[in-house]
Length: 241
Image (cartoon, rainbow, N blue to C red):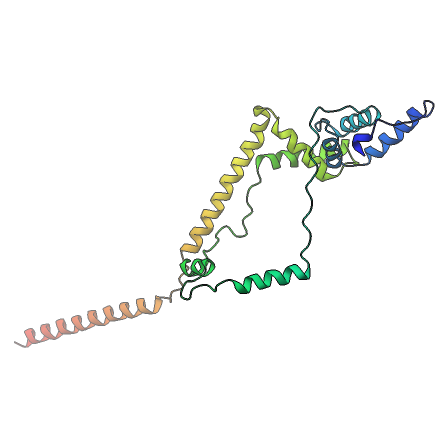
């Protein structure tokens, strides 16, 4: 029991070796698991994996109280309903008066009040990837180098460590990633607007008008020929007179 624990009881000649074994065992655990252990024994959870490991070893070697009050014991659990209890409840339910006819239950009223759903709105942004947040850009940029220094730590724990570090990062160091995020947001909005415009303006396939143009030109030529013929007839009539 944690409250009865008073530190490792190693022999003096084997103490250092045993502490090294315990430290090696803790090093194999992930950062999240170490933080959970630190929370259980009420010690500081921040810091690197090595710092947390050493802090836990120091506590287990010479534990000390945190000063926090001991939580009260949990109350008694409710017993599961026995068949006899279920029958008694069923009898009580039968004895209750039935609901008045004509009055709909709240659930039914809610169903009636809700308006009929129309066609779902078209999602013009479908297929266009949303821009990542500034903190995710920071994690993506820093993760490879951090992984090289801590190959035994999982990517999940390293990413969690970087997100915690982002919270305390100076504004001038955050600016680079926030500007990159804004650029990606503008690019995303431009692509969505282009998709909306393309969906709003349908492509119309029309017939070729070349035949109609030829018909108009042909009619004009026939009219000119008729006028020339009429003019020649008038000239002939004048000569005969």
